[in-house]
Length: 309
View 1 (cartoon, rainbow, N blue to C red):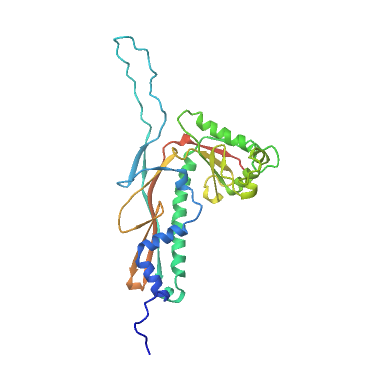
View 2 (tube, rainbow, N blue to C red; view 1 turned 120 degrees about the vertical axis):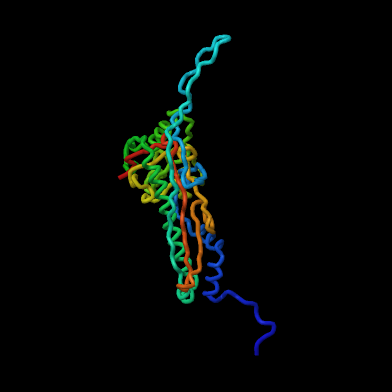
């Protein structure tokens, strides 16, 4: 005998649960943000932000802070001499749209619940985010040309002067007298390990401090620079060989373009969309990025080569 009133409906059925999730694009965007936990650095090393209205951004590379002529003495009643204020070389950064779709079938949802949805979202967003990251890092790696070799490989058992290498790179940027303030040290995981365990660096750390990396396993600041360790694969052109000292606030910019279309923003550069595919009895899920990037001040970065083999 059925009870009255009937029990409230539930979403215990996997097909209903997944379908309800996919019908709400905001759920998908939130899931993408939850899953995008890779240590991607593109947005960290280019912290300037512009709008890419029209599909491109025109910008100037900065060459100097001063006018072309020096001030001259002006006698009473005389005119001031004119001088020019030159612009930097013009450049154009075009928006690149990239992404992938995947189909989640009704059969897969009915048989495996939310697993195919989670798996599909995770792989799509990770691939799109990694591609966007590689675009930015490759741009930065090719734009930064100022460099010097490390005194010795940071992995060497003796003769390493890691802190001196870092301070010299920082000094080289500041010596340009362009107002740059280096604030980031970009290294791969292995170089970070050599840096954090270097005897000279360790000896200079505060004693009796539980924030010491020997207790925490973390080492986040050196010489006023935020240390960003990443997998070596995220450093194209510098895998296993270089570290970068940069002024991330002035090095360059990222310029997303909003082209509409019913997409949900999922993090700073990622967008998602869900479409029902009745002809295929499934759901089409999409992750994409749509942005331009440019390096305006290549002098705001310095490369230390020969960090380790």
